[in-house]
Image (tube, rainbow, N blue to C red; front, side, top):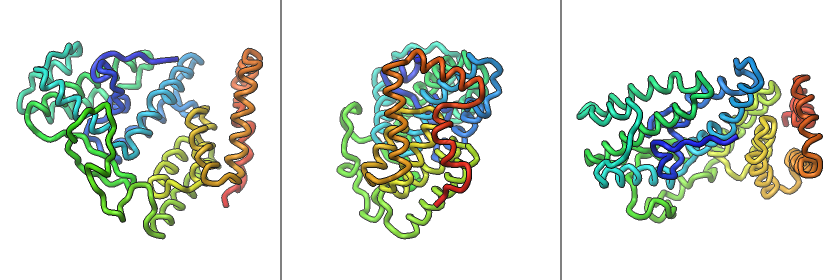
Length: 334
């Protein structure tokens, strides 16, 4: 299932992750995380209130194809995305605002004058509060919020203020960065334009305390996994990776958590990374074996596999749960 959104920032081949999560373009890491958890609880199969199978499938597709990737982008250091966002707003502003806007909130924002900052925040908060209540209308709601974001960025550019977007460092700290000149479609080396002190190099644990903090997140994630709260585990493991990106155990656990949520492509990325860091990682090897086996079965006998999965669903079990469930049921923690 694919989601076609062609309004707002999406109209310019730009994925508006802020609109997907319903957060302002200057949202900090705490705000992004809070909103993600709220949406994930609404959409996740284990907590969704959807009564029929089609709604549950739609909710799962929204979670795996839109919400999780959006959180993945906004929760990590991604300066290129933020710079591109700022450039796009300035470019639209420089072109004289010749952009078609269809939603009423965006039109009102364009006419809000000097109060555009507060109008933007209040209107966005109102739209986001009901964004995922009606699943069939989610794409329209995202488009409406993206139009609001587009107008806000244009107004920001016209006012001559610096780009409102912030970049989130790997340590979780926030830093306001003005956009750098250049083509926003061509990522530049962040270090060349904004040199960072060696001790603050993103993703590299500088002290034993940072490694210890990463272990704390990992231990909490394992606790979540034992309780089958895999969405919570993903959040903890993402925080751990911000402190120690070379932790093979963290990558293998994150791959497992994604696999338990049937997000195979994201699981594969972290499983491969775990094996790159530690070719003997037992959990990663088991997950890779499982993913490879599933891929082979899907290619050779897709129809019968689909039937089997449907039967598993009706009995409350998933194929990944059957293979991996025993790993987190009785004190696997090391």
